[in-house]
Image 1 (cartoon, rainbow, N blue to C red):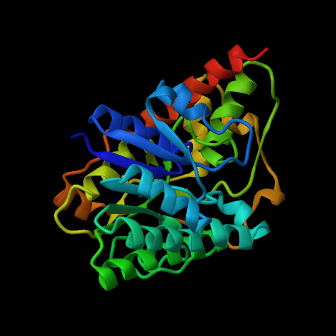
Image 2 (cartoon, rainbow, N blue to C red):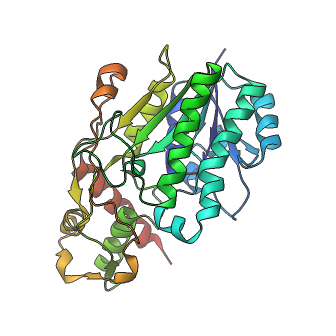
Image 3 (cartoon, rainbow, N blue to C red):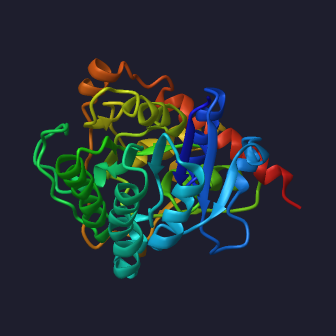
Length: 324
């Protein structure tokens, strides 16, 4: 029989790419759908898989709905990608972030323990847990020092996953994912904000791009590559935690330069620094060491940073051109 997977956060960037990967591998793919907005399924539609996945009305903040979904699907694998995932919002909505990004992980783990304890579990941890970095390059042994309510919430989700693994023998793994982007990224995220602005400025629909800290450095990869690492973690005999990253770090400024240059523009002519976009507590640099994922999982990123940026700009060029 085909394996069954259940994904919370299936309508997000990672959820959509993961669903496509699992469908290609012959899985029956189910996803939890929290009905909070009018159209949350556009990414699944854009990847051409909306009709191939089974969506279940459920919310990971609600234990009873998660239990019912588990009883219905009886999944072999559960991927928890749901969260309030925008770092900037976490300062303005810290309690919502705590509930959606921290407490909900415990809800899912407890539902699994009570309902389908043999289901293999993946938790989406984040490089934001490293925050004020304690080592120049971060791996699985680097101490955490989160610098935002989002990072703190992700840290709880990470440690409660470790705790359930050690307390109840569950096959529960966490991927400590560094920044991963794509044309499916939400418009509020800095990389997609840049690619969308480049397309609009090039096509005469926008004049400037207002930005915060251009000197922040990040390790950016392609989300479509990173979801393969998630799947590989749940194929291992023993559960564990893995850093997933490219190992290459550039500034937001350099990201802007590459994106604008792709359409023949100079970013300095269009980017304006706006203090309102600076974070209350900045994470200056993140750079991951994914050696363990390479050795244990056989995972490597396939898409270069330049390929990722041009992919995103080209997609937004098409979107903006198609607007009425």
